[in-house]
Length: 178
Image 1 (cartoon, rainbow, N blue to C red):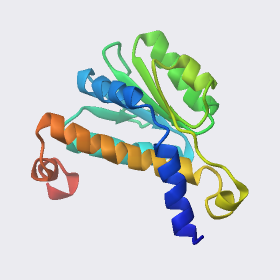
Image 2 (cartoon, rainbow, N blue to C red):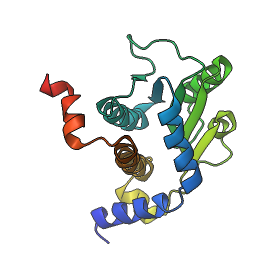
Image 3 (cartoon, rainbow, N blue to C red):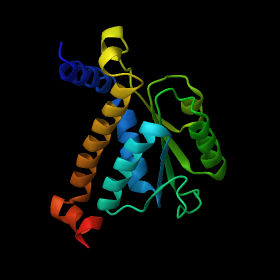
């Protein structure tokens, strides 16, 4: 199988394991929060930043944890964390701090029963295929990261619909258009 086909099929398999109720809980959490805080380390963090940009373009007050201008997380906020292993120390520590403050904590992970899921109110767990052939073309969590991005893009579509927002509305909030 060609690398592209393998990666697409791996993402399709991973996304098919997402619990629709957990996905809906994340959407409701975003809609009901005062602010949304996003964090992940490495490539998972980059995927989180992509999602954060779309949420800003939808009109949400969004911050990426660790940036110099990020305000303190509060009790009426949602903290969304991304980690394939669910064990990344900075991500788990952020979850613990956010939870202690009273923020709702949501996570996207590939590892059920991880320290991150144990600290989260909402856990979206993807069963990411990890056979040797797939890992040879998509190493080190690539399928998790790609699947997370696709999941977030689908959530953006759902949010657009619920908010009755159009691409034009989002374009008007796009930083490049100022």
